[in-house]
Image (cartoon, rainbow, N blue to C red; front, top):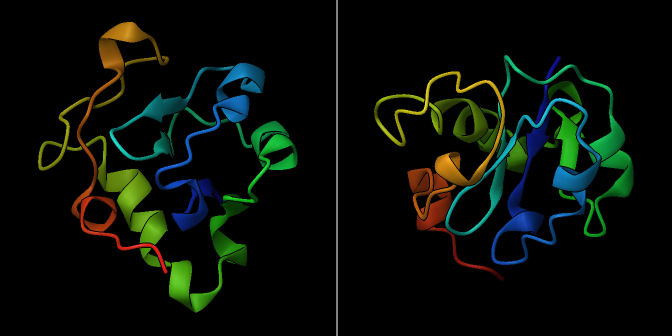
Length: 108
């Protein structure tokens, strides 16, 4: 089970989740934040504080949001940012890049 940031974060990026994360596993992209699936300790603090309810456990996602589990994972791979496992979010890991799903997302 992993925590995932979904569509409600796109173009909002409130950032409250990053302030409570005890392991700094939430990284900033261009249009939204992403949770590193390996670095996350699944404490749930980010989920409880997100003002737009954009964070959920991957096994609780509705079908329409399932692609965000892949987007959060793939964001760190060579095809998107190449960040790999940086060991914690910081200024050097902030980017304007987004996963293609997020980059092309049109809000309703």
